[in-house]
Amino acid sequence: MIPIAAKAHLPSPAQAGPVTFNQSELRVIFGLYGRKVASGEWRDYALDFLRDQAIFSVFRRSSEVPLYRIEKTPRLARKQGEYAAVAASGLILKRGSDLARVLAVLDRPLKIVR
Image 1 (cartoon, rainbow, N blue to C red):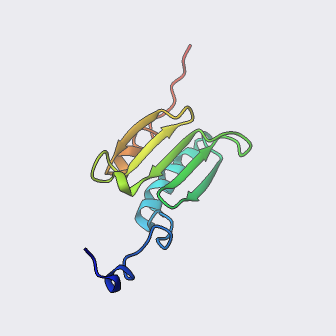
Image 2 (cartoon, rainbow, N blue to C red; image 1 turned 180 degrees about the horizontal axis):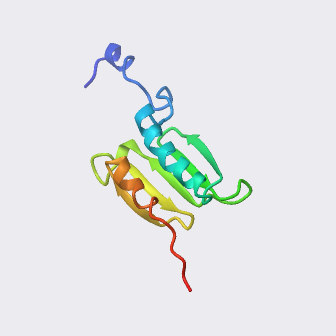
């Protein structure tokens, strides 16, 4: 049993701030984003910082649904990995603990299908 005085110092979920991307994570994400914008594939992005998840959404046009979402979910860090690349359909393309390896699935060049 935790004494009452000790309970006052425990952070509650309401007091904890939103999950965010740190500077090194943003550097990796914007590196990929810059390459895709330069090639004309991506045009806009959005950042969402929720209580349990941070989301970087990528758009082809700003009026459409996101093409991809790059999600950071810290509670999955010890299980499946805290990073995920998710397609517009909700399909998880790759999940892991190394952001650069997860984003590699989005960095492949487009192929022309005839």
